[in-house]
Length: 246
Image (cartoon, rainbow, N blue to C red; front, side, top):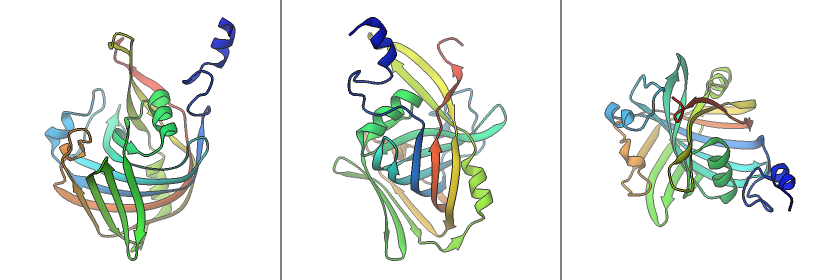
């Protein structure tokens, strides 16, 4: 293979059989269970990087079913989003993500810097309850429940909240394990077709685990829950801060 061929074809690993195709990526019938809860401000300060700013001690715990996504296939995800501001604009810092499919783990980490790890999340309806769970290996680390479609929400307001930016800390090591890339990345969800959104009573339990430390942002009070069904595109990101230069 010639040098020019490497430069032409290299966008992901392995070179001759990448783990995922080029983006952007479209999701059909993406389903969310989002449980907002109050936590400890000191715990948030320990994990949210500058120049992002925390306004309230709030975390959004998410369970997401993705049955149909271009390139990534059929998988489920679970993790924590922390509401923040960046230069006065509200958004969310993606703190943790656990999922059950290699392609989006590799693509999410390599392209955007999503903090993805292998786990076993599930989201399903059980009679009158929407149930989300996360196992890490054989150990349960999260249980979330919500009354199924108790109250319809204003779709315009929900869509507007989905259109706000999200932020990621992208870290790629050098061959000597020093950081070669350390950047704050911003991305947006686009072309959103919101099919439904509901609220209901909710409960959330997080359990200690050495390698899936979701409980380090402890649940002090469950505030609300939202169930969303939508088609959307995961847009490619942009670098807004380079930690190795500044």
